[in-house]
Length: 284
Image 1 (cartoon, one colour):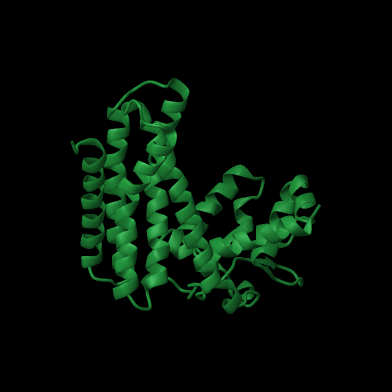
Image 2 (cartoon, rainbow, N blue to C red):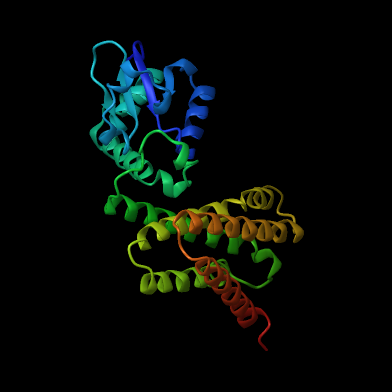
C-alpha cells in the first residue's frame, strides 16, 4: 500500500466544502491533522511546490522531500489507497477510476456552487476554479435529477394523507406543485440573465437539493413507523421553504444579481404551488 510519509495534503480553506471534508478526514481516518494544511498556511519552502494554476482547480498532495506534487483525483486516490486496501484495489480498475475521477472533477469545479466561499477579501490565494462548461452542466443535471427523485419521494410520503391517490399520481402532483415555479424561474433567467445564467442554475440546483434533504427525518419516521403525523411534514415544509429563501438571498448577493430575482423566485414557487393544490384538491 501507498504511504503518506513525507506527504502533505493541501486544501483550499476558502472553500466550505473542502474545509468540511478536511474535518471529516481527520475524524474518520488515521491521517493526523499535521498531514493536512490550508494553502495560505504553508511555509515558503512548501508554497513553491504548489502550482497555483492547477491548485485553483483541484487539491494538491505535495512531497516535503524531493518527490513530485500530485493533484486532483490522482492525489485523492493516493490518499484513499494509503488508508484502505479495498480502495487501493478498486482504484487500480480503470473504469472505476474513471468514474471516480469524473465525480471528483465535477465536485471540485463546482465547489463554490455547492457552497459559497467564506471570505474572498481576506483570502491570500485566488483559488476560484476555471469555469468548465461540461462540469457545470454535469453538476446541474445531477442536482436536478436528485431533486426530481426526492420531490417524487416527498409526494409518495404524503400520499397517506390523501386516500385514494396512487403512487404515480402522488409523485406527479408533487412534481407539479413543487417544480413548476422552479421551471418558470429558470425560463425567466434564460431570457433575461446573460453571462451568469449557468452559475445561477448551478446555485438553484444546490438550493433544491438542500431544501429537499430537510425532509429526511420525516421520510425516516414515515418508513419506520407508518404513523400519520401531519405536523411533522408541515413543519418540514415550513423549515425547508425558509432555508431555501435564506440560501437564495445569500447566493443572489454572492452573484451580485438584483434582489428582484429572489422576489420572482419566491412568487413563482408560492403562486404555482397554490394553483396546483387548488386545482387538484379544492376545485369542485
